[in-house]
Image 1: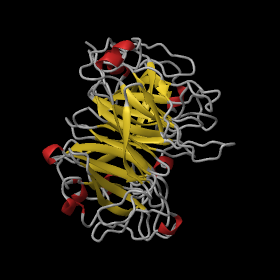
Image 2: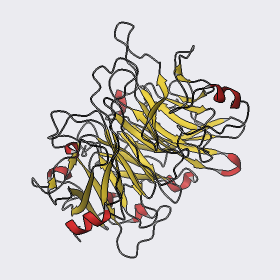
Image 3: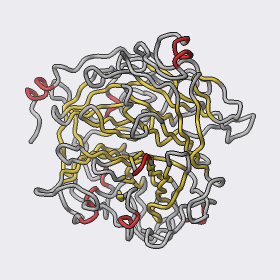
Image 4: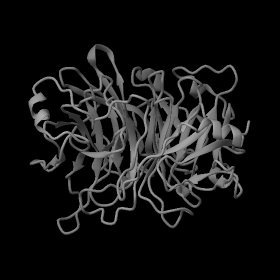
Length: 485
């Protein structure tokens, strides 16, 4: 049912306006009473004294250069390398695959943390030194180089890693499910016969970190459509799936999949759905005056709220035309590089990494939106102005993977130009650095730093996991995390 102008007005009266910070992130609104890192600290244990010495303000203080040349962190914080492509090995003895991307953490038995880690490897296996190994029974397309590994971090610090799925392509982000599995997304539209592939790609697959047998004979969830998938979240109350598309020419779309009547979610149930099960639809936004919004780049102020209708996709498997090209002008709302998503505060946070000449609105270096399924609205909660000089530390550009912090606000992984960070955005509208990548994979004359990916907290909230995509390093970050009083 279309959302009327009256409905839109009544559902958005509580939306507040934030204060945009030029060249940085603006205000972030989260759930009422959310606790953020910029409140007065309450720290116990050996880090309490050092925490009290730091000035109260957003975050945890300035980043301190790493003598090992890997990761700069605030005082009192430390990191540990969990996996490292070309250095650590799987339980099979093969190398940890490269190009770490989307990740989620799950609680295992007896204090074990299970992490499912995407490997964004596109095209033939011959193009990569460390592709995902073709473990028997877990292969979708033997020609493809990507997939997921499952990393087991035990209470004593021991680490084990094995293949969750292989033979998929360009596994970028994804999302965890309320029933404890991982949905890995292929950011490609390659059909069989293209780029050496022997099967069609551009799908979502389910990976169970708790049960290796459940991952055998992998099948795509065709009901979610075939396109350049980025991320996905599941509404735990209504069962809808929300999905982002990282594509251009034209810009990508925000999608919603509605399950068929009577369908009940659970482990391995998605893979049993028919290819046309449920309804896949794309978002169509409009402002408070009822005017159609063609692209999310039109929003230039924190707190901007748009109503959302959903327009059904006619050919979700895109046999003749990519899904995003199936809509006429004025039918749907687009966004450049729709990237990471995370469910929190009763809705879905999602990212548009930047906008330039390919977008009809204003240029920016990142937006984070919040979709409220009850009000059927999207609200702009983070806006990053154009970073004039990304090579210099202090600004941000290109948000990608995100997670909702158990301490309030968001933690955002940067995938932009120049210096790369993990940074936080607090509930009160301020930002702060959490980490800086110091591993130069370029040259001294022309330094290059890989993007951060896979940002997520452990189930107990004590450890922040994040990846350096190249060469492929998973890190565990610990320190004096704090909540407001």
